[in-house]
Length: 87
Image 1 (cartoon, helix red, strand yellow):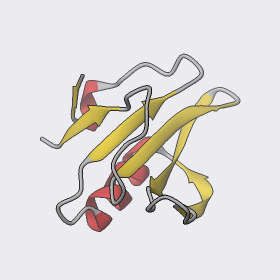
Image 2 (tube, helix red, strand yellow):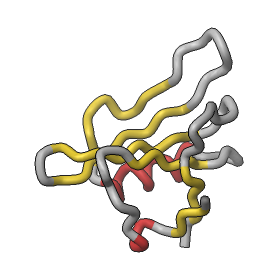
Image 3 (tube, one colour):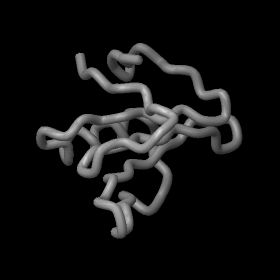
Image 4 (cartoon, one colour):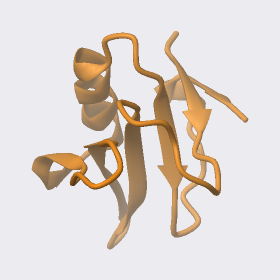
């Protein structure tokens, strides 16, 4: 089972990946952001919203040794089927 880290209130280290999950109508959607060094723009991929499972799969393929943080917004609750969320 994959393990993810709850997104902290502050900044995350450059090179980290953030899966942001939010509500789009009645569904939960997400995207993946790779945090860049200060002064550079973060990379967001893909450009369109995805289902949570697809967002996590994409993050895993780009992870390398980088941690994956999860940003739950708009009252999205964690679903244990996505993996383990560490606080």
